[in-house]
Length: 342
Image 1: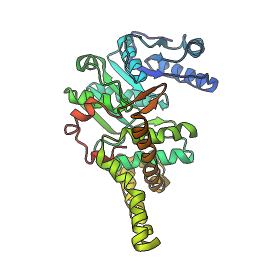
Image 2: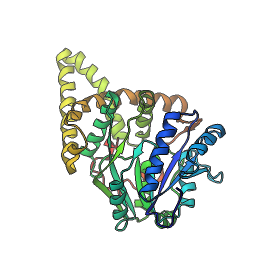
Image 3: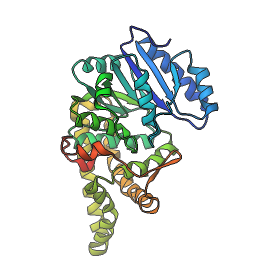
Image 4: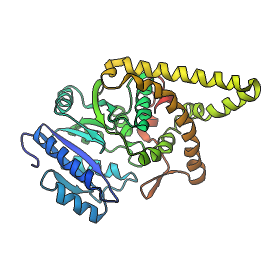
């Protein structure tokens, strides 16, 4: 079931694998069949090594449009090359771009496509399920962002009109945080972006090892947000200083204050737009753990920044966490507290 003239949207998935994962291949096959059945043109742009690409093609070639990355695109972030390739091939005006851990339902697709009649780009929200313990910490991060930022958490998916994408031109593809770079690029170039804070799309949790790998990378992406980075860099030194000055009681009081602030912000995120329908109430209890995790991860990110000048992304070293649109559109973005991005 490939593209049809009646497809409501093109669903674009850039993917890259160095190893074959049979369970994942089967899971994607079922998901692509589902998407095609509810009216999507499914385009998978695959940057995997040749033998893995071939395995994917055997499994998905009759279900979706499975193609290689166009070599004319040479951005350091290979995912961005896949996005440009997919947009070139898409036959629908409405395009839904998603990471590999995102799962849409028919109702989600209908809602997003309806919004694209009114806006140039739609930026929904994610919720996470199932919830292993590390997934709970990640979900708590989402709630804190929702509690701090006027535009909510940073999702692993967005949707846009193809004609507008072609009009605004290419976004910076040499950065780690490409998901937000494309949104800010659209906004910076006059596109009407809808932050759909009440539209929640399922995000599956990463494996534990992948989650560990993402910790310093997300902190590295924040280095352009100097206030936020300094805030987290100061957590452990401040606790040590207070411990020396006021003893264990001083350090305990400091961490208690952080605990309460994290809980309150997560509560605000849980309450807004009825997010409690998608996030269990106990998620707020993991918010302080995310604060501690980020306070540690920022030092690992600093190690990569100082020691290597960048952060590894596949076989490449990317020196920038955020790109041109992030810097140029900082004022235009309309965030409550930009230093608390992620």
